[in-house]
Image 1 (tube, rainbow, N blue to C red):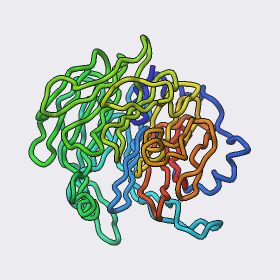
Image 2: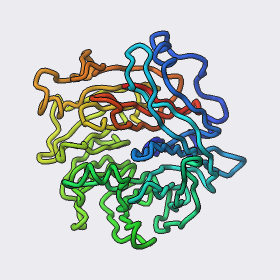
Image 3: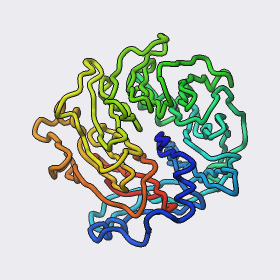
Image 4: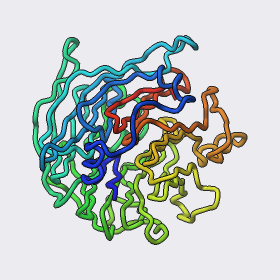
Length: 399
């Protein structure tokens, strides 16, 4: 059983992994060696489960967990992500990772996020105790980021599975991003079957709560465009769309019996498009205006349950990973059909994006990929893909 929310897994699964009973991690497939050598990588002391990026200052936080005796403990690894020069193309097209600081957490960390309206953002970490811990960061040229405990958000009755902070919206979007505004409206989902809304600028008490899922809520995600809507997916097989002004879902679909929605994401530029992954290893896009699954809406197919997925910042590509240790990058079907009529993606055919980078790629890694994030383009059309794996590594790769 998985608790798939940005790479969070059931304790029994991770305990088995920590005991060394999983697959060996000695080498990747031969075809991946050259790519791996170009990766920027940092190592963690515990199993990394979640990632978050704060673009204005190029900060990265990694949420990690490990078991010590009968107690789960956690750690936050704070890192910087700076551009690096690709020797072959002489272009800045990959991020270089370097660790700044490590902060202990009282329980296992299930998800992490940045929030706030300044260049010293609020750092959030959810735990398996149902509490969201908040740290206020500060820093200067010599010390880029220093977290200080600020408060704790209580309200959930079980493991918190995911966090989502509202993105900047409207015509001032670009200006806000440059000033460091990544929002203060926080959504959280939990095994207690609820989704809660928090106003981080006003109160440590949840301002709203929704109860539409019949079982664990695995992930919640704000809309990429509409500041009042969000989506969620859960163990009960429901993929739902919500409006903060209403108590009931405004739309959704139910997957086949026994199939779990393990991960979701909302399209950054197409407000009606939703991406979700299933316990059967399928990644699909759906048009939320109709909520009618189509035969050609499958973006990628993995051999086992999807652990995490993300749209690229421009919305043209999708990165997804699964329990079979595969990492796939493909074109978004919805973006291709709407903007690139000559570049429809089938999930298996090779292709290129507008800037010439690979549109479709599949790699089998040493171990399970638990979380995926993208950095903003360092040059026109190019982004770096960040991903964490249970071999206790976090990698940055030009994608």
